Length: 148
Image (cartoon, rainbow, N blue to C red; front, side, top):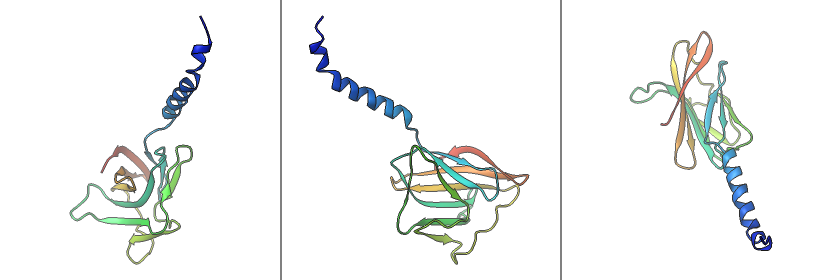
């Protein structure tokens, strides 16, 4: 068996192996929520996407929905990384972002014991991701991830 003909396919084999290995490492966007109040929303995976807005509302949503906190990009979006989580704390200002709710720019209301909420992340790829959580015994309890 001659090795020379096999060597010409080596670059292609390396490229395919590297591509498969890299794609196996990347995960779709996941939302985790810390258990303290106010909660920190932790976005894992989803590299290549960018967050353009975050809102928190009571859940299930009334009509019209009651948004407690809504903030969005005015200058730059938040790029998501496969390797480093993106953390956003409820009510905290994000550099280059404006706050839409409360409209006066004040601190949003505290999250209430026994109530259920939904956090929604608007992405620049035209989609959104959401997670539902409840405040129980002073802690945040996350429910299954929801698409909105």
